[in-house]
Length: 158
Image 1 (cartoon, one colour):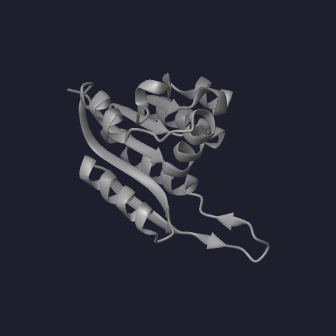
Image 2: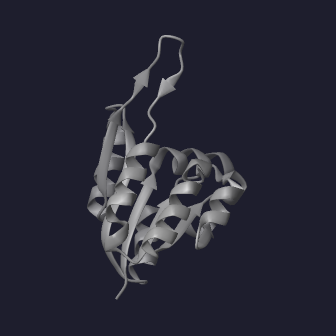
């Protein structure tokens, strides 16, 4: 049975599914889809902590499904912009587990991950799959993946 590690860029998935479909992503359906393909040995969701009740309930739901939730504080800059990027943390965690799994699954359309996927595919000979909203996914990321899965109605909450 193949060993699978899942990495979710929560902010990317939230905003892209909301922008494209006006709906929320169905993490439970994703889990059910992936667990049919092998053993999920690690599943991490990377999110920003704002401390509101709705967000805390969402994080609890992710934990109940089986995800480890890693949080960074939401930082509001003096110019009004915000910071809360998990790219480096996701990259480090993927590099640390790559040699112990057969498949890495990344949920993000962020093209910054293209070099990472190329690296782990070639260095560790793993499959690197991407789930993201097609219209909002960098072509370089699609090209870097072993397999690309476009998020569509099937993976959204009703």
